[in-house]
Amino acid sequence: MPKSEPGAPEMVRAAIDLYVDNPRNFTISQLARSLKCERALIYKHFPNKSALLRGFYQRAFDQYLESCSQTPEYEQFTLEEKLSHLIYTHLELFQEEREFVEETFNALIFQASPKSGFQQHVENRIAEFLQQSEGDVAILGGKNVAEFLTKETFFLIKYWLKDESVSAEQTVELADKLIRFASEALQLQLFSRGLELGRAMLEKNVLRLKPEGLNRVALTFLRRYT
Image (cartoon, rainbow, N blue to C red):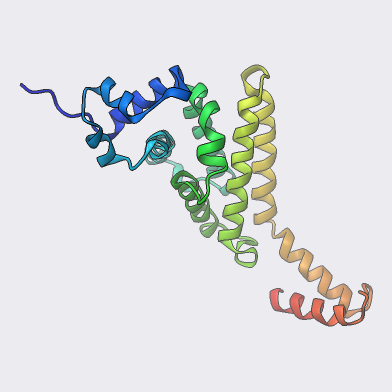
């Protein structure tokens, strides 16, 4: 019985192993030899080496989605719980290939331009969380908030990669503070309540801006969003 051709998951798995062994000399040709297949077969699934290596992050996101679907109570999670689950599940998956993530996360994901598929997936997922939540998202714009929270998540991953504390305790502490602040700030409507306070202070002349024209501009803005 002829040996079946390797699929995309097998290619990504083999690529990770080869890349970790020798990052600077990793090539598609080397991977093809390792898998005993033609380079054309690899290019059929991945247009270039970077796309192949990013396959690890796509696989991690898919595994995260699978974890969500296998958690019976997931749909009842709060915004804070959903953000926690997203961040900690990815950190757990990344830990399994920490050396590979250390070598590739910054170039392939954090500094990627245009956005990597992984970044877009995370942004879209967070945007879904926000659409299902109450609070200031409608005022701030869900897309902008999702982009901000995704970037903060990526900064957190970079911090984790350098964290030498026992069981990454410093990362856990920082992550908990970030998640708690983001969820509480959005759900407690701190931004909208601040706008209401600013409008009231301007209208009652408790707060004055200079030059005078700024008062009219500020009031127009505040009345629009409160």
